[in-house]
Length: 317
Image 1 (cartoon, rainbow, N blue to C red):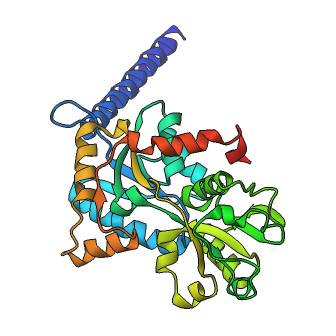
Image 2: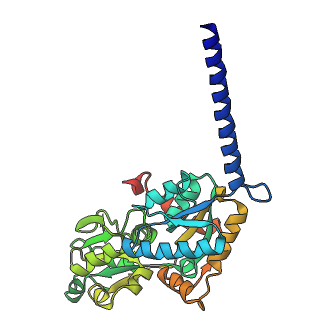
Image 3: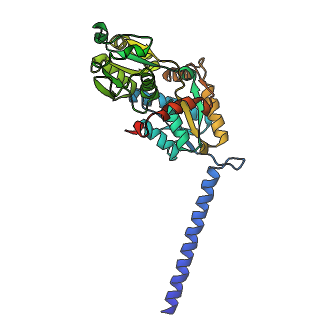
């Protein structure tokens, strides 16, 4: 009996040592796979997403083309992960589910603030340093004089009570935050001074354009770059009423955990997109960009000030 127990103990101890040895070996292999020559760790794969503010089907196609190009340039797999909304993009970056993200001005500030300084602007488009929004109106409403073009939004004071107005996504800089800011500056409360309390169109900027063009609402606000690329027949049904002053908007934002070396390579790849290369020109065109440029976090401070000027909790409703 004692001999059997002793034999069992020896067998059990041997099995445990074998498991420990195997686990240790696996750990070493994993560390070696993620360790660069200078001893710094870097991801085996980069995950990115894009705020869903235009047609999601086309967005996915464009993002996957970018992923393929970046994978080739960086020598690291780059994978696109679709996000359902703006907040998911920010949360994914903070929670280590994403490594870099294409964000709007407001969500760029949200990500930097939520990360406590671990997220930084990587690049922006040339157009984002002088971005703007269009206020557009339903063509029939314009023809009847119900809504009018203007160079000064304050001219609308006292004339909006019969108008149905829509913003884009509540977290959109160009479809909500800045249009709301300019309305308030002009003495118009968008939640009280329109016939229907200002809603939020589904489907991002395309949803806003469709709502106005169809006559579901009389007017709305959206991203100028999306509008400029829209079909001519759709724009004819929703002409421009007002163009806002310039502001800073979209950016690529990256988390520090990616590592300085890989961040530098990623930035170089984005800034180096060449219009003489048809594939790279197609990527720039899909992003409505002449080029991507280097930028600094501080350039988005004015957007943060506008965001913070709204009542607490307003942008989460």
